[in-house]
Image (cartoon, rainbow, N blue to C red; front, top):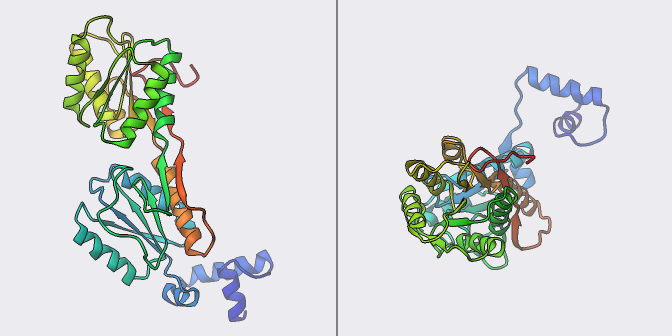
Length: 318
């Protein structure tokens, strides 16, 4: 066969019979042929690589985002390079310069919270930049989870179980995500009980239960928590008081951090932010920009999902 026929078969382009295309691919596999990625990049003016930049060194949020990005891009022959910068602007600039030196087709910035930018300037770069779970620059494309909708799922589920005195224990009020979740809680559950703001820690979960049980009046019959660490601690603190979960008090977390949620006793019902799906959307969007397609800028919120386990009672089909 001619070189052009073989090229078309291997790149799934051109018009030819399925049998011919499969014969070329079989022959390529038998001799261990691999296309020259460098030559292919020179012809297309692309390197088929994407840079992922993050200050989430623990990986709680970035790793599922990266899994989604990789899943979205692998079938397009695109690889992802992860660079962690902590909160160091100088280190951030080093990594950005290295990505540009490698001629990445685009950069995805990800972080630990949606209302803080990474400590490095990503404006006016010669490649497209997408933001996922971090604050984006003006006029950029930014992906984040719908915290209000996720919190509403949790509160509505508890109300559907017949819970009427629902408490909300969450993280620092300075977080936009905390305020969005608290707003959904207030809109649906009212203001009979105060929102308890604190730290993202198990120690705060124990302290919050002590505060709730020291208040006058009837005790909560459900507690909606701002993250899974707080929720796990609340389950433990209730057990220490002889309060049964979920018979006496239903508990719902937020994040679906499986290493925490699945090991809670009983296993924790929680809101999943669908970070993997968020990563897939970010990956496909940066690919579209790299290919020169038009993409409307703005903030795009993706829906959350309630993962029902045993800590609240009920079942997925109620």
